[in-house]
Image (cartoon, rainbow, N blue to C red):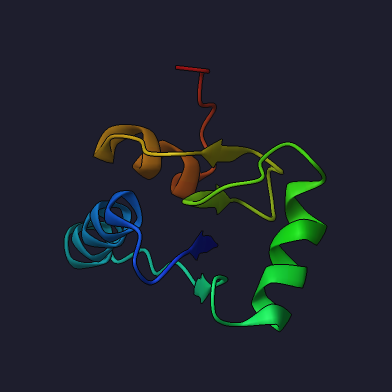
Length: 88
């Protein structure tokens, strides 16, 4: 899951990386815009549990791992695949 803000440049780059992930690996990640949608913002807060208060915020529901802030393609791929990710 990606939680993002529509006018956020870091989020735009995360979306580009997720589009690449879908194209190259066939992995689709749900995206939720939070700056203009209070329901999505509430959903983000549920998953963030105060671990992340900004965007982009990526969360894997199966592994409970997350990435708060901008990250490179390889780290996002590992998160989406359910592999262990290390802190930056």
